Length: 363
Image (tube, rainbow, N blue to C red; front, side, top):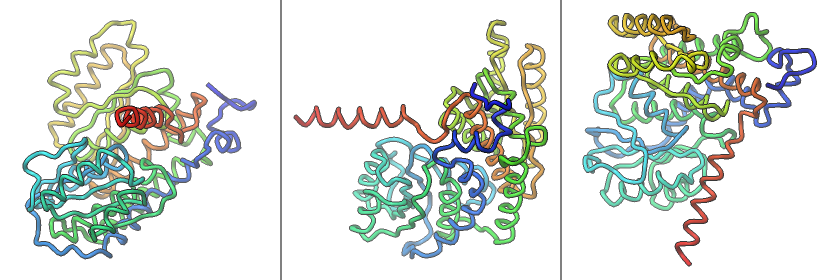
């Protein structure tokens, strides 16, 4: 763990700035405003099709999570199914009545580009969402509806734009009704969480810094139900990419039918486990009880756990506020491990090896 001479790195602004080469902290602070900006950007392109019977978001990693979030947050008002498709192929149900949203911040995600090729062959209506790259070129060449956003951050740090753009596209497609006051209040609630968790707030008053301290040297399992299920996935992937730690995500109520038994596992592991339960006002009452019972099982096994509860004004507000808290926690944990949150060298290595494999196959 790397700390400044004064002790806690999380209470040293200069030390955190030196550790944060890509200004991940700044990107998190801007996430709420990105949502509103993205929704405005999505109002520009024409969508010259009838209302679709389904929506498929093509994406990977940080460019795909917006689809998971949209499907969870607005499950009670989306008028057609919304599925996130990760990989190289498309299921047979994706056809001419499916609105396909090809999402890639870099524009170079090979899985998404391959899926897009298949979608165009099937004559699906397509909207492209990107900051540049090959996807931008394909969209322009094929004259596809296109939404571009600033190329300032990594995909995971551009979530606000991705989610806001997707919301706007769904509105334009006639499958989602979303009012401005709800969005504006959710942005305000998320900005309030930024104010509680930003670097200048000392550890003694900062929930994200306190949680990061509790997660040091522990394998983290994040669990949630309903609309916060995709938020739990976001927490998991941010811990992976920012803090460079292994973490898992478990959905409720499913986890109470299998995963909970694993909490009775070998005693030697228990001191190195942490359970984070995300809860919101929209949770089903039975899932609230199940979460409490899971916490009881953790207590019985002497496994550290905590409940992160959001009482924000709407499901969207609960999701955004909880995402902000998780994002900050992952970056502060990175600092405590002596890690720079921005680089993802392992992912870059895998991409380079795939390029080498392509070159070898062509020779």
